[in-house]
Image 1 (cartoon, one colour):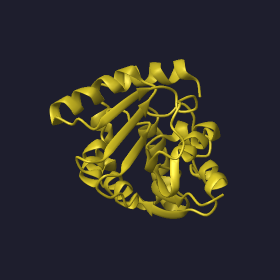
Image 2: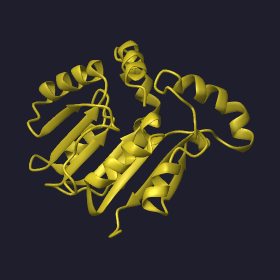
Image 3: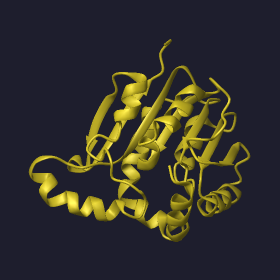
Image 4: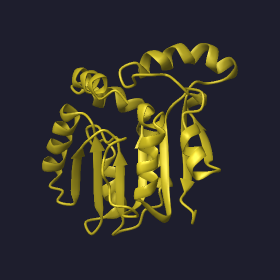
Length: 208
């Protein structure tokens, strides 16, 4: 991933990022639920942005649990810190780092969410780090937008590309954003949303 390009893009977008996210709120709730987290668990929000998933993750892990948020953009993390302070959370740790260079303790988290992080999904190195941080039996869930097929795609794909332009630096693998994760975990459970323009993919870390 090009860190400077990503940081520059999210510096421009940080102010209105929460508004752009609104159409995906139901997908976000579905993605967090798919992690099947329990009170006391540790969740890794990989590419956490402004912390829009934190409310759902907090409800899942509770006060005795822990949330780790990783993001490359200091502007996004500034807003995430404001959210944490406003909510009074004391169990959230933020790490400013590129996803493909972040240092995470091996087998230390119970679930990983990658939400609307297409650039991370295109980095096998980043996903390798996320999977390494996941405990055996833990789930990783990724969700976001994708290229739709068929008649829906003819109408909706131009809108999806325009909508995504503020949040991605590349549309590579836009038809199957989960391809690298599938290569690491094997078979994934896939669920289409929003007429095929969004998806939820989930996999479990085995003994391999």
